[in-house]
Amino acid sequence: MARPVPAPDPSNNQLRSQTGRTPMIQWTAEQFERYKLLEHHLRPAHAQAAQALITLARLHPGQMQYERVCNELVDVGESIGLLIAGCETIKASGFQPKYTRINVRFRHTCDFCLAHPEIRQRDECNSLEPDPAWGIVVETLLRLTTLATLHSGEQRHSSPHILKKSSRALAALNKIFLREQRHLRNLEPQIVPEIAVVDDRHDFCPDCGHRVSNTSCEGTGDAVDVSSSEMLEGS
Image (cartoon, rainbow, N blue to C red; front, side):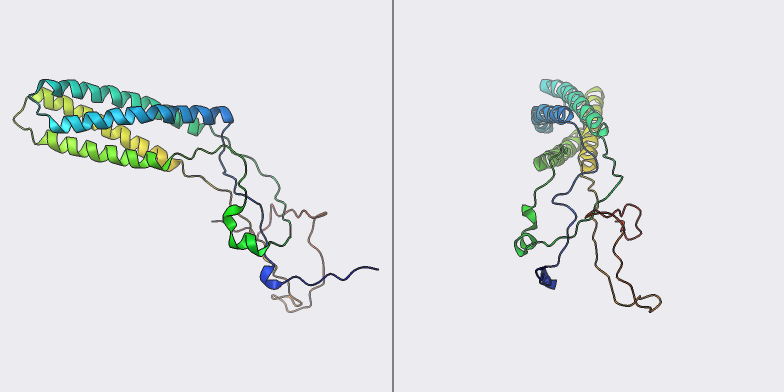
C-alpha cells in the first residue's frame, strides 16, 4: 500500500537551478598561474612608480636629480605597460563553455539555505578576479601623476628641454595607468544567468478559459529540456 505524501509547505516551496554561479569566461590552471605571476610583478613596479612621482613633485627642474627621475618614470612606465599587455593577452585567451542543454530539477530548499544563500558552494573554476587593492593602487597612481603634472606645469621659466621630457614621461605614464584601469574593469565576471522556474499551473487556461488537462512536461526522468523555451528571461 502506497504511503500518503504530505503536501509541501507553500512557504518552503522554493526552487533553485544550481548550487553555484559559473562564470561565462574561464581560464586554464596554467593561464591562471601566469596571470597571478604578472600581477605579483606589478606590485614592485607600482611602488617604484609611486616613489618616482612623489620625488618628481618635490624637485625643481633645475636640480640634477630631476632628469634622472624623468628617465626612471619612462623605464617603469614601459615595464608596467609590458606587464599589463601580458595580462590582457591572458584575459583575451579565456574560453567560453558551450551549453546545449539545461536540466531543470524540481526540489525543495530548506529554510536555513534560504536564510544563508552565501553558504552555497561555488563551482570550481579559474576566474580572474584581481585583488580589490589593485584598483585602489591604480587610482592613487593616477592622482600622483596629476599632481606631478600640475607641479611640472608651474615651472614655466625652467629649461624647455627638461619640461618637455617630463611632460612626455608623465603623459605616457598616465596613459598606461588608464589602460590598466580599463583592464581591471573588463575583469568583472560575466555570470551565466540563473533560470527561475515558476509554477504557473491553473485549473483553467488563462487565455481561452477551457479546463486544463493534467499533462506532464515534455522530457524524460527528472530532466526537462528548456533550451528553446520562450520562458527564459534575458537580463
